[in-house]
Length: 201
Image 1 (cartoon, one colour):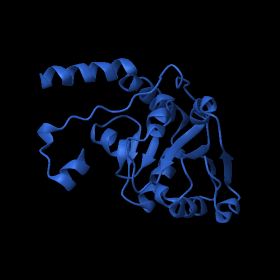
Image 2 (cartoon, rainbow, N blue to C red; image 1 turned 90 degrees about the vertical axis):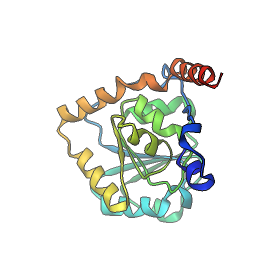
Image 3 (cartoon, helix red, strand yellow; image 1 turned 90 degrees about the horizontal axis):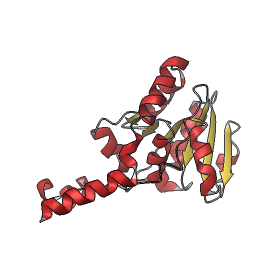
Image 4 (cartoon, rainbow, N blue to C red; image 1 turned 30 degrees about the vertical axis):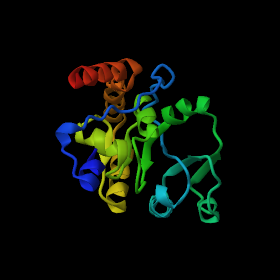
């Protein structure tokens, strides 16, 4: 919505955003509190922040990263000893990827309302990302488990914070995220559509 305001000077009172939904019956696997893997899901290209991913992995060399992508990474990524790379993972396997992750990171420069954020949250896994897309919208709404940061250094600090949480505190965080997942369901989506159509009439 902010882009419409910035680019076209549209009055926010005339805009309603109905976010994407997913099949929450599919992404319904609450993960363990002792997971140690930091994941990135998306295309390994410039717009997704690949240069910053490399810097983050280099700085946080004591942690394990798992990059899931549809395209092959650069040679520089392959050289990182703390990075595991999976190419062409099936959609059916993604709930397990999210469930077994400690945190999803998204250093993207631009996003729409990216579904990977929603899919991660529906599995109870927190997300750290920049002021774009679903990260911005959900952070504005104070949605549990969404950590919006301003730059690479902030992202590194937030990753370290999440990775260092005591098991009980981290487990409670996952439970709070998971228990709010109904807002991403098709039922909620249809209710929002009906509400806006009624207002429009």
